[in-house]
Image (cartoon, one colour):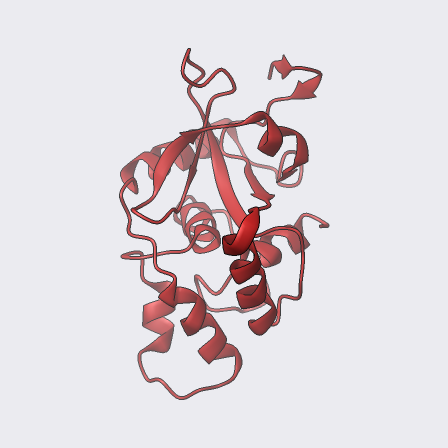
Length: 179
C-alpha cells in the first residue's frame, strides 16, 4: 500500500478508532463510560474502503453518521492519529474485498444515538425483552456497531467474549487494538 506524507495508508477493509472533537465527542465518551468501556480518546470508528480520487487523495472511509452511513474522504488527521487495525488480523484479500462491498451495500443505514441508551440498559440489566434484537439490528447503528456488523457479515469475529452482536463501542474496538 502506498505512503502519504510519510504515513502508510491502511489496507482495504482495515478499521480505525479515532477521536471526535467538541461536545459530540464528550457525549460519546460519556456514553462509553456509562457502558463500562471507560474513558478513552476514541469516540468514532470507521472502515477504510479505498477509492483514491481527486476528491479523496487518501481514499475513503465508511462509517455511521447522523443522516446515515456513508463514505467520506479519509483526512490526514485520522490517517495519522487514528488507531488502525492494520496487521492486527489475518484477513485475506477476498475477505477485504467483501468488507468493502458490504460497506457499499450498507450506505444510508440510519444512525441511532438511541443505541447508546440500549447498550447502557443492557449493561445495567434493565429488563427490556426485545433489547438484544434492538442492539443487534442492522436497521440502525452507531459507528462501532457498524464496524462489528460488517466484519461479522464477512466472517471476521472481532470479539470472542460472548457479547451480544452489536454490543460494542468505539472504546471496545480500540481495546482489541491495544488502545
